[in-house]
Length: 127
Image (tube, rainbow, N blue to C red):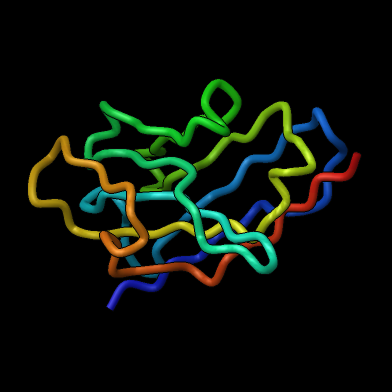
């Protein structure tokens, strides 16, 4: 079983930035495909960003494209989500998720694609 932990959430003004980090306790995420999802109150969990095993390919939801960047820190064995130009509609609990990929360059976009999930970190953007 893989235990994931998100960190870096908080309160920020519109137009500001936050950097979230996802780590696996006792191990590295270098062997896993990783996705970021978010869930606002009363809404379904939605896809935000994903990265392949090697980090050579990334994918983003249209709502965050150009503002968010997902990347790997190969030394730390973690995955980060850099969020710039934040908007009030970005307010949500953000989750990281991981799974062993079938192939190196595959990324996954659906909640159902992932086996391991973190507890979530709150991101609140004020206007």
